Length: 192
Image (cartoon, rainbow, N blue to C red; front, side, top):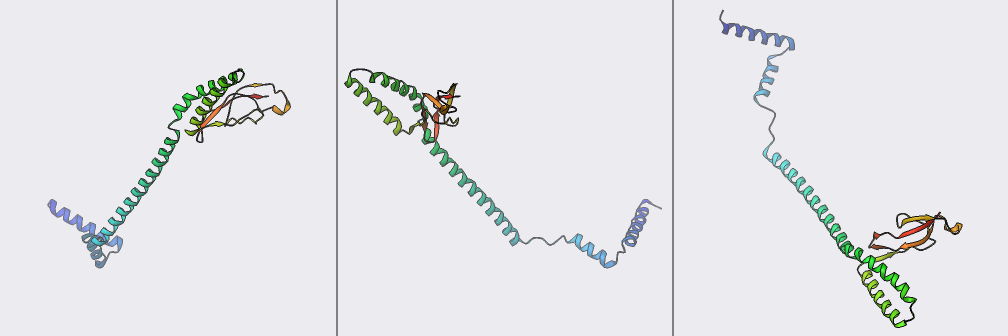
């Protein structure tokens, strides 16, 4: 027996055994053969185009929404930048304003009323200019309850009265804010 006949007989026996194992009929074998020869019905061109169009619409809508979010975010950042653009300049002028405030206290002690009035006018002009640029003083005074969100405690001293325990006893340095942002916290002494 040659090798070719051996393989034919082996293939024939395998086919017969498979048909017996699965109870295959000629109709079933024909159906399986047809399915192998003709794959599952192909998607029509129109359906494919509809699916592609839907996918592209989805991409477009997502990209559009992402762009709108980007525009909103950059507009918000731009507004914040305009609000705080002067922050560095105003912050560097705060020590000058503090010195001016201390100088005003000493000038009021002077006997010369014209000097006091002239320096007071300059002081008010400087303060008004800074306020027009958005600078505001953080309002805190003696007797206020200490809040760490709006003031910085330098030290604690024994409270002169029981009412001042945990409250501001003295304001050492004024605090300022630019818009809603505090650029320098007031420095205070609190009673314990």
